[in-house]
Length: 263
Ligand code: SF4
Image (cartoon, rainbow, N blue to C red; front, top):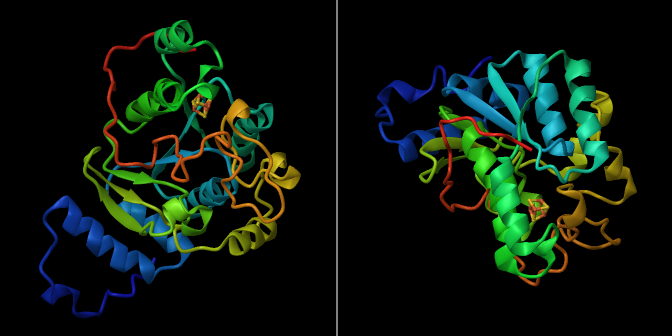
């Protein structure tokens, strides 16, 4: 990897000391790098974990991790409500790239507690229930997946929604105490589609059926022509900023050291 600032006046710059300073410096560096070099730079920045949901962006990132050999741990969250196509893509991707994707599942008692209080599909009934389900099935497992990580690599892209329009290439996640790197933040959907096609990256077949953004099966529908990319996610909610919380700055709680039964 050739970093463009290698001969630039980096030495005269003060070394970033705090997390926010390091993230800001990384942001500047990453902007100058190719995608493969961004992945290598992310791995260089500390113990790195990449959370994949097996969507187009994440599959492109997985291919980049595999082809660059970057030391980045790849993990996914199996909520127990994923599409069969998504689940099948985990092993297909592992076989294709000869790598391992660590799977984190929710604690059984958390899911049982949600079901007892709201019902299996109670997330349709209230925003409170929906957030409770996303917390049990996604946020809590995410906390475990990121335990010990210094760098969190994601497939966030500015064009995915207005909510993500200002996503930086790197930012300090104060709640989790790590640097979050979004190597694809400035990439277009078209560019990533072209890259995936050129590199024969295995993709979720649901993309070709009108699902640009794929989450849990009961909470994702195909979009209509002209709708925003994430319009099919929690489509019954009115809040334009609807997210599952993984990429909001809410604190992650419940990361527990003791193993408990998973779903
Ligand atoms: Fe539950 Fe839906 Fe959130 Fe999945 S996306 S965790 S099913 S509310």
